[in-house]
Structure formats: C-alpha cells, structure tokens
Length: 502
Image (tube, rainbow, N blue to C red):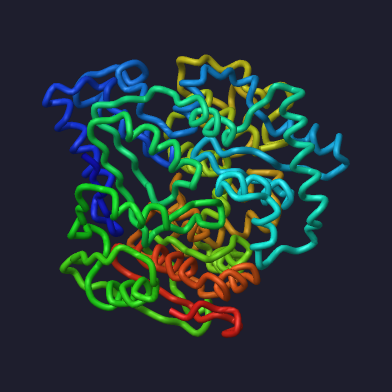
C-alpha cells in the first residue's frame, strides 16, 4: 500500500505524518519497525522527539530509524566518521591537483554539497542526478569559465583520491546502500519532503518501499526549489501512476485569504507539470502592499521575514535597518553580538539595583576596558554561588564606573555605538531573537512570519535559469509568497529587465 500525501503551504503535512506515526504505535506496531526519513535532519529529529515523549520511548534505540537517508545509509553500512570525506580532505585534494578549494563540505542538516569550487559542485550535481558528467556539462546553460576536459580529469582524480585514502562521501553512501541491496524492511515507511529528493535518493527509497508493508510519501511539488542541487521533482510527480492513493490536505493554517492567496495561486498556476490541487486559505484576509522603493517600507514594528533570490540582494535591507535603528539577522548573524547584547541589558539592570551572577559580571567586564582595575578584569575573585551589586563590585572587585553604557563600555566602534543608540532612541526592543530576519527564499523554506517582504530582483544566474526553465522560478516565488501569515510586502526591482514580476 503506497500513499502520497500532498501538503500545500501551512496545511500541516508533517503533523499529519506524525499523527499517523502515533496511530500505528497505538495499534501495536513496534517503533523499530517504523522508518521515518526526511530531507532534513531537523525534521527527522523533531519527529523522533515527539514520538519519544508521547510514548515514553528511547529516542536513540527505539526510534533509531527516524533520520535522513544519508544517516541511515551511514548506519547500515557500518561506516566510521574518520572514513568520511572532510573539508580538510577536500583542501588536501585541491593542493594535490593544484586547484583552490577553500570550502567543500556536505551539510549534516540535509546532505547537500556546498563548495566555492564550481568544478566540484558540477561533479557532485551530476552524480546525484545520475547523469554522465560530460552530458550534464553540455546540458548546462550558464557554465562560466569551466573547461570541459579539466572537469573530466578532476572528476577522475577525485575518484582516485578517495580510493587511495579509503574515504567516502554522502553520495557514495547512497550508491553503496543501493548496490549492496541493504535489507530495510519496515512495517510502515514514511518519506517526508519527498519533492526535494534526488534521482539517486529515489533509487534508495524504492529499495526500501519494495521491502515495506505500507509507505507514505509526503511533499509538495509546488515547493520544489532545489532542482539546482539535484532534486528530481518530476520523479515525485510521476509517482501518481504507481501509488494506490493520493491525499491532498485541504486547509492551510498559515496562508491568509484574499489578495495574498490569489497572487500565490496565480504564480503557481504558471507551472506546467504539477499535481493539480486546491486548498482553502484562512478566513482572515491578508494585506498585500507594493512599493516602488525599499525606503518606503516601514519595518519599525512586528516580526518580519525579508526574502531575496541571493544574499547580496539583501545588502540594501541591512543598510536600511542600520539607518533606521532596527534589530535584524543577516546571514544567520544578529546585528548585535549576543554577548554584547546581554552585557548591555545586564549593565542597565545592574545600575538600577539588580544583583548579577559572576558569569554575567565577567561578560560585562570584557567590554569595560580600563573601567575595571588591573588584576580584576578576568573576574577570578568572584564566587560562583554568589550574586553581587554594582556598589559591591566598585568597593571590592575593581569596578571604576557606574555611568550609562555608552560612557562606560570601551572598545565599541563608533558605528556600533551609534547603531545601538539609534535603536534605543527609536524604542527598539533588543531581545535575543531579532524582529527582522533576512534570508534567501531557499533558506527560508519551511519558515513563516506575520509579515513577509520580498525583493523581486534576480541574479544573472536566476535570469539564465528563467530563460530555459521558468517553472523553477515560479516555484521559488510561490514558496516565498506563501511564507506569510498576515501581510505580504513586495518591492519593485531596481531594473525591470532583471526581475520576476509578481
């Protein structure tokens, strides 16, 4: 019995799968006979944590088959971590071949390969697509400065290097799992985020579902935005001819009704090859606003998710936040270092009479410079179990100042100080988690916010993609527009010749 569960944005696809897991365990299916595999480690871990908590199970033993496909292959093949290709191995390989490799690693989160060397990226993508390397090279439309013969020779050298060192990579694990026909028979098999699986991973999934009694394959082809990394959404769509049942989740708990839902449906309606599915948005009507310039957007209140097709396109948003005194996250880094943030908050509390722990005080001391006497800056004289007043530290522990932070904290550059002052003057709450988060649309998949801002600008690579595979960009912007729970804000492009027009 094979079932596809189609989950449009915010319809609770993963929750549906987890409810099925609960049902099967309640019916007596042994947890070890359930295989739950997700494209991301986070999703698989969350599923295991929920089942462990609800049924008082041991996550590591009872739910050992809740993981990513790469992790499962690693386990079944009995691999050792020291036998896996590491970033240092790739750097060593680069030195031997006289090619610069600064970064080359497989993500432990989703198994995707990331490298600053385009040759390695092309080699890996061809492997997960199960395409002949040179045929894949010839099919690429936007290859820049990549020599065909060099690409082939480098691929052969990489094979030789791994053979000589006895090392494997994530893709090798999947290959070996399939080649050795590993036993993986489950009473129930779950595959989440199936639209993101590569051709190679689909072969592994087929190996498992042929040995399993029941299989549930969940995903949303409309949110398939990792084709560039080897994802084979066409394979997922073609499964409709093979499965016994297709279920569509009909109600979104995220997408508001009205113009936002209408816009998203207009976008995805442009895709030719897809599952035709309808779902109801929330009854609350969303707000859609458009702007001719970024500076017109007021992000002074609320939680925001700002999206673009590439990180560098977010630079203007970063500058706007700094100008307006808004707290933000950019490239997964907060605009204020968390240690400085805590020091600022604790300093102001301390000045108002609060007691602080030795850890909190030591963190403050690192920013006070000469405002702490010599011999006290390391905070070695504090007792771990005690708390201290500011006055006590002035009298006994070398503290020289009790002035406001900008007169006491030394070593802060002028920009940082002015930025913090601006934030405070504007009433910005500096919490641990910034109000405004910036991300590529790819990086935000699965995320959501009350207010979403989308920049329509495209990179040259995206424009090239659009010219020969427009569906890829339609899916990308559909995914972006469906991240919002209440408001969608769209900024016109600087150059309409380099834009996806929403």
